[in-house]
Length: 132
Image (cartoon, rainbow, N blue to C red):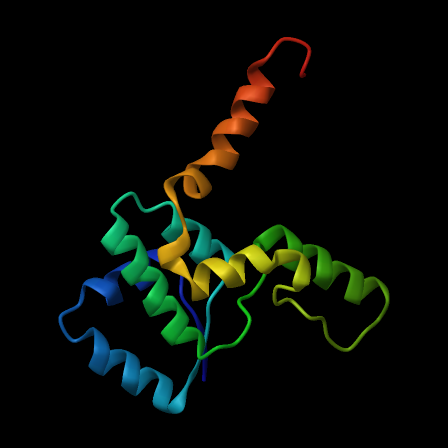
């Protein structure tokens, strides 16, 4: 069976004292998809140790498979496949989304500047006069 958990479910699994046993059993007979959104939400976790631990758990659950793209990109890919009458669509991240792979596989290298820099910079630019 295939599973794709939202971030709250991953957080609950992370906090469960039987986490390792549950993850081992889950991965023994199932496939778990991690999403780029799961990675983003974990990366925004303020506590460094928890952030790294959540991302390590996601890496384990992903079984070294590419995470699914952000929801808007999944919708775009599925819409394009539908219009082109394709039998399937690739909804996993690609090379243009390498930052998600990097965060998932090297969470300890995610600095506070990386973690918060882009959103804050973008907000500042949008607030400046003339940037409507």
